[in-house]
Amino acid sequence: MHKDLRQRYNCGEVAVLDAIKQWAELTSQVRELLEARKGAEIGGFLNRNFDLRKSITRISEGNLSMVEAARSVGASANSTGSGGAIIGTYTDEAMYDHLKATLLKMGIEVIKPKIASAVD
Image 1 (spheres, rainbow, N blue to C red):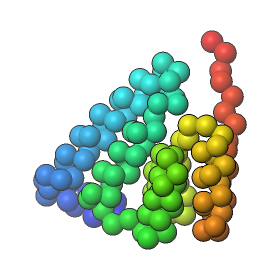
Image 2: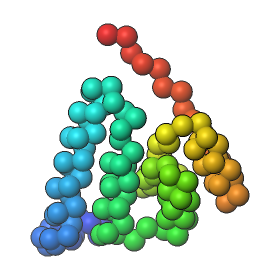
Image 3: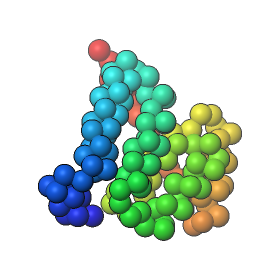
């Protein structure tokens, strides 16, 4: 996939160039949210990142089905790109429980990392 994108970039394919520009903007916006300790607000940016990738590359059926299942319960979701894993956000414990149950039906385990905050 990355080799194909490089070739398409080198050829000046407008869709690829536009996606890269949008990814850069998304990255800046997410960084600002994280620096402002507003990480709970990044869900829409994760969704947009995935949607951009989907618009210019082929997404495996497995990754696509995981993202769609997570989004079906209201969670945000983005494929990690390496295959077999997604990352996303949820709004409350009820959504998290629904997410776990929905993905478990597909044989997919959901984990919730515990992120320690640094003390300034």
